[in-house]
Image 1 (cartoon, one colour):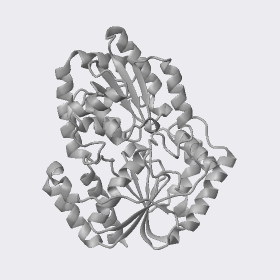
Image 2 (image 1 turned 90 degrees about the horizontal axis):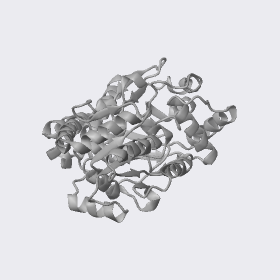
Image 3 (image 1 turned 30 degrees about the vertical axis):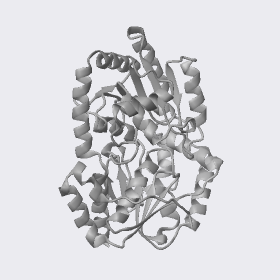
Image 4 (image 1 turned 180 degrees about the horizontal axis):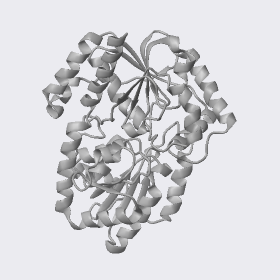
Length: 412
């Protein structure tokens, strides 16, 4: 069998004071006829990145409402993850397709994982392109199949999309963040479900200003000077080099400003270290730029502290499936600036819950505006937090999947 990921216990009732009783009761009612349904999530990695973060909450909540839910991680070696990183980039618009040998590697590892997939499953819930061939290879191993795409497919490399499509178009159910990501040719039932954050995790729980400042101070931040923060994986699509350029433009006007780039290194991202080093090089030894990752001791509490202490939180992505870090910043009521790309505009109503930008110059101008007008930042932050509370917290995410499972069972 594929490697199991162990998750903690969560209770849906604990979220009632944040999301209201109605949605909690709706989840319970939807789950009642589904009790005992065997759900198996299959993903590429158990840590680093948004998919694993989502599943550490979704799996225990599904168990709490009575589903028999587990989470399995596929087997892969370095050649496989190099191929799937290339696939990820191409599906988000990079010009280079996988080589023939990389496609062969991808299919070979999918075949290995298909062989080891448990055959006693009601719903096989496959996440992203890495294990996407499972349904084609072993459709008999689950009564129902669902493919969940977490990446921005709005402008994919046509050759890569054409090669992948035969492996995903046959899924009876598929789920995307937004309608624009659904590729032409998808069969079955297509569902639109934006992700959500867990407000009760250490990354998102309330931190006092004093505690947040104390943590930032431990990493060399001068807590009496303004701080810009971007939290994301070190990936070209997140544009940390552009954030550094924007910071430099801000520093010409506000010399005391600082920048923190905070990210995690994921096991399925072999390019991460290379781009992390490129980011260090671009910072060129500037002592007011802190570039940190989970190997520097940056975990959930530290990310929370940097987001909570920041004067402005940035996510200057040029491609973005959704961007959980956007919701995290909104939930903390922070002034937010995001790239006008992917799932970010779904969360950020320009000028109301934050700002959307399309260039380094726009990003710098908005940073200067927010640093000069703290009341504007507070107003954006207040509206952003309420927007996140209403639309992007875990119980809503659970409810949407329970509705899909109900559709599956009713149609069987």
